[in-house]
Length: 211
Image 1 (cartoon, rainbow, N blue to C red):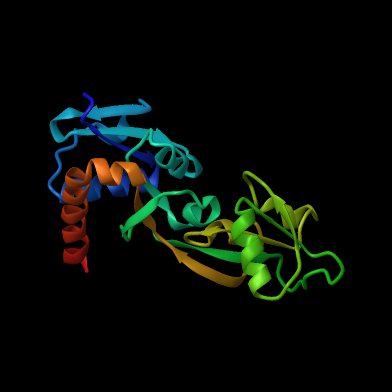
Image 2 (image 1 turned 180 degrees about the horizontal axis):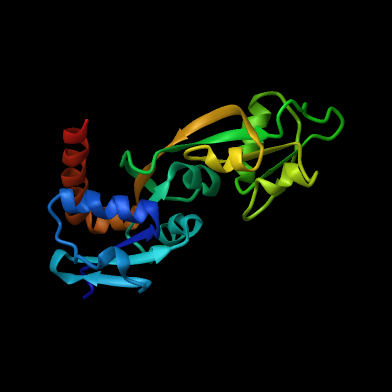
């Protein structure tokens, strides 16, 4: 069906919480929806097609128009800086970005290094603090960097803080709170405005009721 609204969203916590939000907004998603291993799921009854993607790829799919809408963390939005419109703060999957490292250690005065999978966000943050640092981009297991001497600090997402504690790291600075956002392709926003606006209104009502 060509008139399906295509929504890109990541698997995992965001996917589960977003699906629950859609159900609370009155959309009928199949019971096995969250358990599917498919990468593309059509819910024709509600006029949706879902693309399940890596979190960092969601804004890319939306920007290039293969998805009309997307659900992405604010961290990803700030890092990717894609040409999309942010429609709504969904207030789900709340966490925060933080600077962390080994306890009781100072940043190297000569060539401080910061490891992160958010190089753009980290570079802006330290520049705003008036600090010159070398950013080292990693794709996973960021906590390893201080433990093996690769970096003085890390910048990473923190949810419960358990991962930091288990790896003997401490939080030095809390940078910003992160929640998931509903984003839209600019062309889709013009061409499918009625469908998009109805979705936004119904979700916004749920968010307002939840306070």
